[in-house]
Length: 314
Image 1 (tube, rainbow, N blue to C red):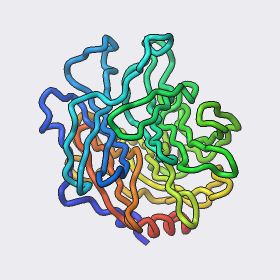
Image 2 (image 1 turned 120 degrees about the horizontal axis):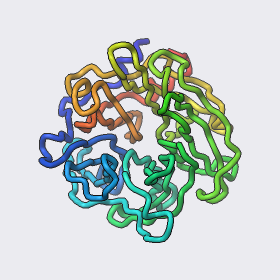
Image 3 (image 1 turned 135 degrees about the horizontal axis):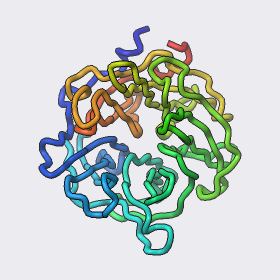
Image 4 (image 1 turned 180 degrees about the vertical axis):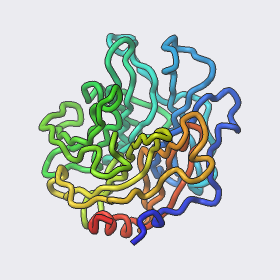
């Protein structure tokens, strides 16, 4: 089975392109969710005009909306705010790379935020019911932790989230798991899978919000490899046990996608594909991903084929 053929790029790619937004320096890494009759993307945006006094780290989150999941209108307002002048929230900035999980009537958002003059990022938890208003809850990870992703339901009475501690400064980025009684207090940390199980994720590996299937929790991951020619970001998948989600019961040994198209190879950050989540429509997985910090794109494939690829270690 050729795993690299499961996901097919949409003919309308790029769906959102930085060239259509003058004054925008970077545009990347969408977190998708189905909401009423819309597809919503939480898009990371950096403008050329720095307004917060934190140097390069002035990223914001903006909402893109679509009726068909293909043609999007990107809003102009910043959606995620620190919402408080009480310490330490004035130190927080760079609200990007969100992961969204729907639990009951709430959409919970974990944002890896930078903390001025401190080791970071840390995971800031917030929530919304309407994608118009945002309610900050609390910080739910220690530094460094990027990409924390919450499961969409309790497992044996506990909430679970996948963590990505480490990464950068020469250290590997691996995937861990933790549990909580209330989404705020987290503990019982366990390692799940380390970077480097294949060449395409030898340096870093990172999670997205898990998707429940009848065979296990499907998690779309990114992997990072830096050969002599530069750094490359790939997309793959792992499968976790439904009752003991720290157990890896399958994984794609092959990547699902690598930078192949011109819009995936050249931009602010060359050779980069980066997912922050996916949505399902029946057996179809709609995977939205950022490319090169310049565009938002879509690839569609079979959930069952990806799950079977994980089980068979293809």
